[in-house]
Image 1 (cartoon, one colour):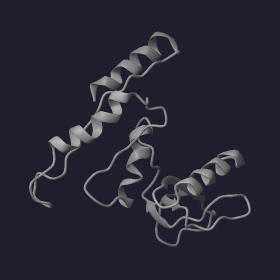
Image 2: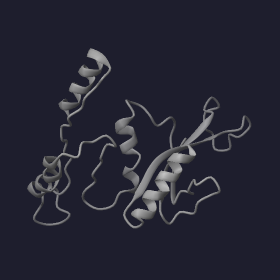
Image 3: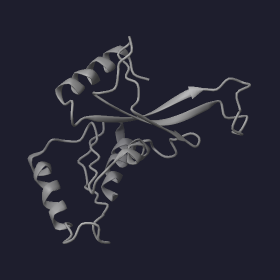
Image 4: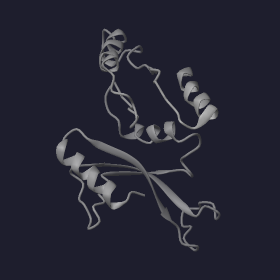
Length: 161
């Protein structure tokens, strides 16, 4: 669903951070009318996949990369507002103890830079793998809106997390 400029910018980021940057996204394939070999519902016209790409994935002529991993999702993947669903599509590809999901519009305040390592230090366990080693931590964001009072209400409701 990207245009050529977005592919170009993504590939620039892959060249800048070849070992650490990975991108998870949702892809889909249209089904032919007669293609129902594994008993999926006849009204489902697409198959959805959670895909992961990195700098080692080969590019095609349009700049699009072939996924390194591709996992089929059962049905339409966006159930809520999209934000959490987009972050959840990356979960099957994660390894390790900590996962940090950052919004594209997240502010780069000095205080936020100090916040994450200090908070994660508070939840560090004595022994790896014990029951207290995994936590879900939410941080409030400073969100602004220029969509009027409805947008301001929606932006201020983000602090509830």
